[in-house]
Each structure stands twice: as C-alpha cells, then as structure tokens.
Image (cartoon, rainbow, N blue to C red; front, side):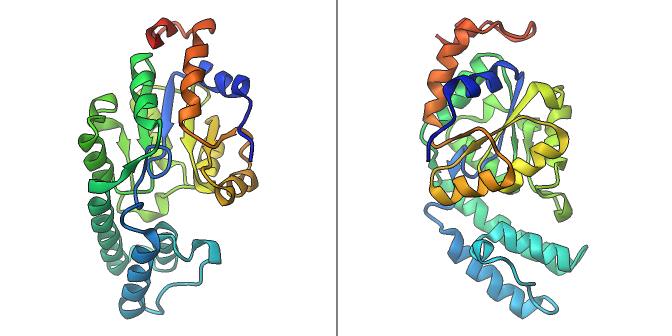
Length: 252
C-alpha cells in the first residue's frame, strides 16, 4: 500500500482554488468511540420492527455501515416518513459521536494551512451537518469553513453521495468550477461523486480495505496519511499560484 508520488499530489493542490473535504475519515474518525457496527446493528433492529419489509439486503462490506443501511432504506422506501425517522436516529448517533470523535492525524494542521494559503474550504459529506458543526466548533476549526460551507445530508436521502449534489452546493458557495477544485475523500461514493461532475479527487486510505475500495472506484491518487500532505504545501512555494489566491509564501 504505497502512497501516490508527492509530485502528482502537488499538482492536484497547485491546480485548485477550493478544497472539498469529506468529513468522517479525512477530518476525523467520527465513530472511533461510538463504533459504527454497533450503530448499524441498532438501525437494523429498528428497521426490522418499523419498516415495511424491513431493510433490503446490502453487500457484506456494507453490513456494518450505518450510512449504507440508510441509503438502502431510502431506495426501498422513497419519501417514507419512517425512513425520515430512521435518519433522525442516525443523526442523533452522529451528534453524540462528534462530541468525542478523534481528529484524523494531520487534518487540523492541513485545514489551517490551506485556509491561510487562500484556498476556499468546504465540507461535503453524507453525515449530518449538525455533527460536522459540533466537531468543528469543538476543535476551533469552524472559522476555516464558515456556516455556509458545511454541506451534509439533507432530508432528501436520494441526494447522498455518490450523487454529487453536496459537491455542487459546495462549488456554488465557494464560487469555484469543478476543474479548479479538489475533493479529499475516503470512500468509493466520494470518488464517484467527484468523477460525475469532473472534480479532481485525492483518496485517503488508512488501511488496505479502504485502499482497494478506492482503487476499484477509479481513484488514481491516494495517500495513506493526511499528515503526508503537509510537506506538499511546503513544496507549493515553487508553484505559481492562481491570481486570486495569496502567495504560497504564506505557508511558511
């Protein structure tokens, strides 16, 4: 599991004015202290008792993924009030998890340095926007995004990634085109959503299963640590910046 060459990663940042972050993974480990399998089990039990015909079958790799279960329920029962209640239950779990979520090593520094370097930052996630705000407020990172650049799950669950709706909202808010943006994500859904609208993608895979998932989704540039992106920002000194972005000397 070898990371992409730093030169290739540098090219992604050099060509970007905006950086769109997935939340759980690239920014924090949301379910580190509130394990996702336990939440998924609770949602499956709730669905068996409350949803007509329960949940459809999901691939074994998604069995312990709360977001995959919610997406499957929404696909089988579109516009269902009961699925809305299921989403509310997951949102409650996510808010509690955000209170104690562990930072992804290097993510805080990366966010601060990108903001200082003039990049427009946004969060594009399938998690609830409330959980993102709780975490960012807790870690004193909210000012780097602002209220209007948190683009999370809405009541219309058909718009969850790989649907690129949250990315489109982020592009509109940052005033960036797809080609001058970069998304950092750790799932196949992130990669597919970015590809659908032509946003360059940088994968983050902290283990072999994540790596394989991203490769199968078509990711070509992948890193195994967010921390390894920090030296890339140092190297941006030698790259001519876009005219409306401050000089990379701010990274020093």
